[in-house]
Amino acid sequence: MSQLSGKVQYLRGLADGLHVENESKEGKLLLALIDAMEEFAREVARIDAELSELDDVVDNIEVDLEAFDEMLFGDDDDWDDDDDDDDWDDDDDEKDTVVRELNEGAFIEYECPHCRSKIYYDAKAFDLSHEHTCPDCGKELFPEDEE
Image (cartoon, rainbow, N blue to C red; front, top):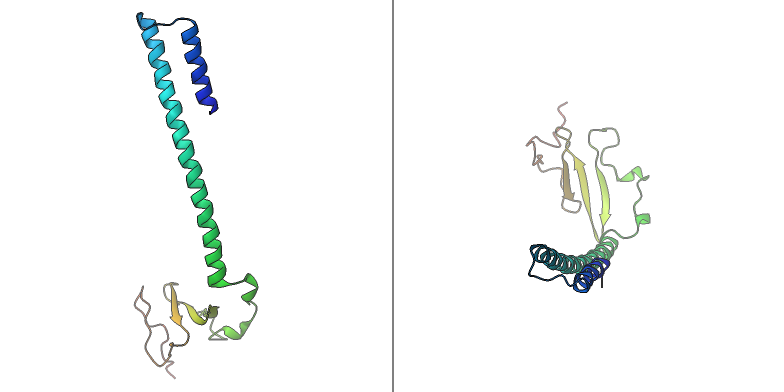
């Protein structure tokens, strides 16, 4: 029994011990208040039980998400951010492109130099001979150099 339910039961016992009855206006009021408090106590107990269940569900989701994250990305040690060999363009800082391993395949993360939107390409299927435009601003991403 919760502390709130215990207090309401104590008030019910006091009312019974004082022989508060439904005949007087004050007695009707006190008994109605105690009845309402009993309903509040039951509802709070129900909400507390549901909250406890939701807490368990959230804990399970967190465990599943951590397992999925581990399965998808592996250990944090697998990422080698210091290796500059993965950059597409060594001299052009506007083309901030990084290739990262994702499970068995790889994807290319590219930042549009015009609108700074992130675009992702499948590294195995990526071909610079095709025209690539930004899906957000519509501008060409890899214009041919005019010399």
